[in-house]
Length: 233
Image 1 (cartoon, one colour):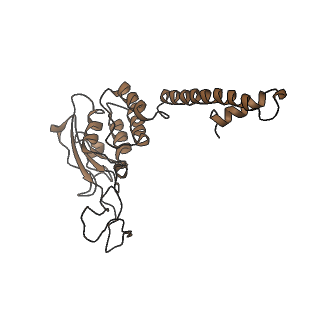
Image 2: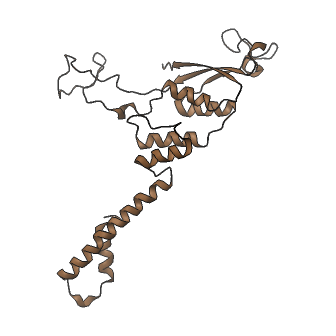
Image 3: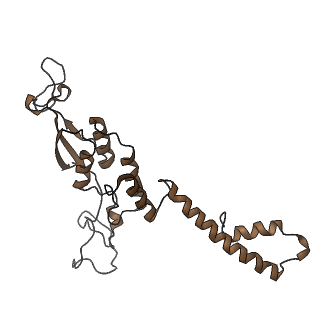
């Protein structure tokens, strides 16, 4: 029983019902149940209408409508994307810092889970400098600078790690029959089960990364982006 449901409303009616009707009067119970059915429906409708007033509680098409209101068509829901993951993406994009290096770093970190490598050849803090300890070491610290790359940056972005469907057996694989249960092992790293788009939750496309960079860079700047897989030991 929950607040506002049929049983809850029945109990509330009975608590205020005068005693002269006797115990369990059938006609009175029928009238009360009729009202309770209607009121439970109205309360459920109220609760559903209330949810879309906040991003953190909106669901279904209401969440899509919120995204469209804030971003137009810039941030659509991905195929099979759950409300939880879509809501997190909306919140990330909603109050993001723009037109700054730090804003770009933050959104790429939130999007992928990894710190991007950002290098501005015109910025001494990125390239290092002679006679400045710990800023220059061949193949270890610092990069070549150039006066020809003003207002430009080179960014390395690491894709997020997700399990996806890589460990699931494909259709017609001979050693995996229908409904055959077999746990993954070192010699047989595949799993017998139906896959679904839910297993791709958290997947970030190259387009997502490019869009994050484009929407946080300052006008009249040029950003070179390299997207790579993160090597995990």
